[in-house]
Amino acid sequence: MKSVHIADPMAWLDALLQPESLMAIAAFVLCILLSWLLVWGLRRLLPGHELKVLLGRKLVDGVLFPVLLLVLTFVARTALTHDHALVMFEILLPVCTSLAAIRLGVKVLQAAFAGAPFVRALERTISWLAWGGVVLWVTGILPLVLSELDQIHWKVGATVLSVRTLLEGALTACAVLIVVLWISSAIEARLLKSATGSDLSLRKVISNTVRALLMFVGLLLALSSVGIDLTALSVLGGAVGVGIGFGLQKLAANYVSGFVILAERSVRIGDTVRVDGFEGRITDIKARYTVIRAANGRESIVPNELMITQRIENWTLSDAQVAQSTTVVVAYDSSVEQVIELLSQACVSHERVLAEPAPLVALSAFGADGLEFTVTYWLDDVANGQMNLKSDINRAIFKALQAHQIQIPFPQRMVHLSGPGA
Image (tube, rainbow, N blue to C red; front, side, top):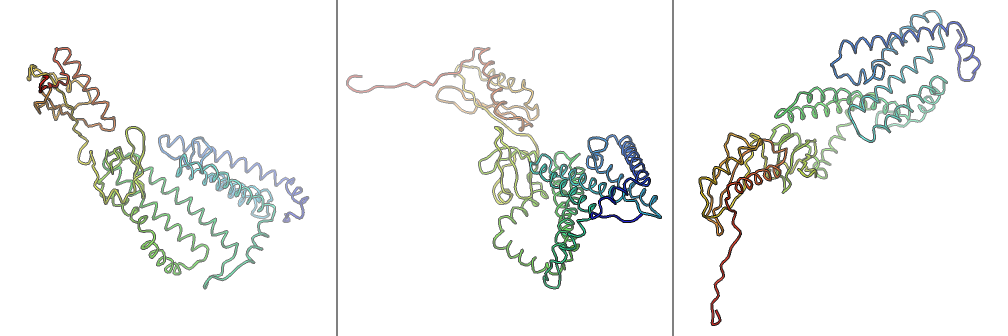
């Protein structure tokens, strides 16, 4: 069959109306059914596995379906066009390639940046670029445009660069970035899936390190594909080192401190800490900063350098047990033993108070208005709040004292008047 191009649109129509084109369409429909069946069978074999990028949430919205369709379509073209070409496959193959590229880009972005507002815009951009490339390729305009762009070139050192080379390098870099994000997201999900407690921070640092290494290797591969000599980057590396040494000291210190924190596990995700007067629970540790959430919902973003250089109160470093205390004043005519027993029972009766260490009630002072008792008890769920527990304990103490008619004295002061009129 003779070749056709955009300058001869009637030739396109004639070629598409040939019986061989109908056979190609039938083969393509068969490829769609086979791809669907293969994906369906894999989902049946792996019902509990997290393969959202490959399989998607539905049967055919993942990457695996368009990739299988592309492979089977290529096999069908090879089998049916061994002696003559079929124009229909010149359309079907680019369409399948575009669909696979769109699905891969979209699914990886959704997995790597879940909930990010810019993901939707990137998805549209990938779709428009992919389908636009298909239209230009099928119509024959793309090769002409690339040829013209290849004529615009300049020399950078010993390397000759052109606009076409830069565009191809940018596309290669984007493809490498998508693959790197896919691999790093899969590794991070696997590492953090079963991580709890003390090993969560260690797995977090491993995940961040793997992602950084993959990004670096991907950047080198993208630069090599453009034709840039990597030995020339030594000068750039020296300049970056000088820039870090002078202008980016704080930024570099924060990143290094982040890896030190995650490696040493001096503070971990879930710990309750006090930093610079701000108290809360660590919800996330990034490479540059740490997020601390207070009980009232406020969040503090603390640079990691401060977590290394300043004094940090970590309430749950060695264990999760935290002591809390309250003070009670009763009248001097009250029975000390009875008051101690009532205060102890008020603490023990609360479900959040630990039985071991046991609550401690001590006669701490002889106050101006009465006997002063200090009640100390322990809890191990600081994340559930402290003020609410203290309020419950005080209410239980107040009810117990009222029930046994033990008086909580009001402040009393005696004034002596002296002088002629006294």
